[in-house]
Amino acid sequence: MADCDRVDRLVGDETAAKGHLPDLPLEDINSFHKREDGFPCWYEMRQFWSAYRDWLATRGFYLHALDRREYEREDMWYPPPTSTCAASLPYAERIAHDAIGECVPLPYSKCAPAQDSHGRDVTIKLVNTYTYEYGIYQDLLRCDELFGQDFQGVLPPVAILDTSYRFSFIVMPTWGTYNPLGDFETVGQVVRFMYCMLKGLRFLHSRRVAHRDIDQQNIMNNIYTLWRPSDAFPTRLAEHRRTSRVLYCLFDFNLSVQFPLNTPLHECRLVSENCTFTGSAYIPWDVCFGAYDYDPFTYDVACLGNMFRAKFATIVRNVPEFALLFEKMTTYVIQDRLSASEAFACLRQTVKRLPDRVSDTDIILNPTLNFWDAERYWSLVPPELAVAWAKYRTPPAPTWYTLLDNILDYRFGQTMLLYIRRKLRI
Image 1 (tube, one colour):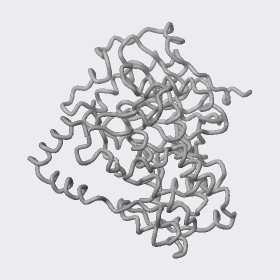
Image 2 (image 1 turned 135 degrees about the horizontal axis):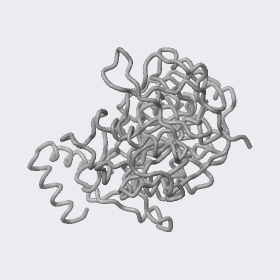
Image 3 (image 1 turned 45 degrees about the vertical axis):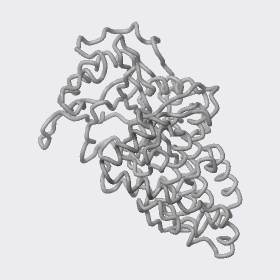
Image 4 (image 1 turned 60 degrees about the vertical axis):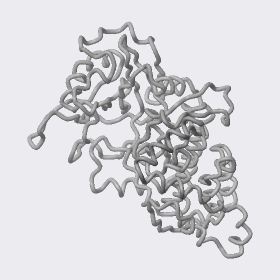
């Protein structure tokens, strides 16, 4: 096996004996934050990464150079002039002729670009060790199925470098973050994306990991550039999407929660009051109207289903069965909602029956954030099927949803509703 194809998985103290930790006042990641908003600026974190450069190098990970060009105000990460060693999964493909670019990517304070000792591109992320996120990365690192060629739709770390502080370095293969969902050209390309996403969510839920932040910024594809994407990159991505090599993955577990593996999915509940959500545009009603608690796994399914029907409603014209899939992934009647495993099985069964001519059909997507309007896809179902499938449609929202929504428009009503539902735990 070539060096580039070997996946060296490092965890915990396997490399802890090499080198000394820099003398920086950093007990955990948050202790290095000086700004009032709780996030360090790049100038502050640049000192941190520079101090850890040699420490990481002794473990076989070499940070990109920090340099300042004449049009920049401060040092930025610059890709090395050396080429990237091609490697098998879970590593991705770097675009050809990427040695020189026009602009470097904007730095993210908690992440740093690097290459390993085999010349493979990786991204190193800082994670506090007392979080669910750290435990999830530990679990994923030990999952052999994530390092085979049957990709599971989830990006695992390839190393976890612990320190004597309350943070660790999580080393991830570099994948592509430029991933517009409105630019798919054919039915088959959309199906490929949906397949990877549902397969990934099924895998996470099998490990009892609830993602809780399914959104476009937490999805990557397996082609990338080490520079800021240029005007030519969308063409490169489009060419890659036309091949059978294209893959998509879920990543970023900073809001995720993991339950014990032997816990039945339907018994997993989280208190809504203790949940923190980002700006995901696909949140279902599960945590609305002052709900005391919710099922984080059915919540994930609804978020992904809302993304599908927001971005891919027009695919129902070519694959009418997807109207049923969208409906059963997003229904507000939670006991009728599909699990990730059931939704993946439904997708596979539907795709298995698709003729090649349908997969190759050109498609024009009309993405929107108005995913609540189910008529956008039901109106595309042939009339005879729409009548036969009417019993599977989500019933109209009950009037008390509207009442609660009106109550929440007022601050006093919101306070009282939240207080009552939390007191009664309903």
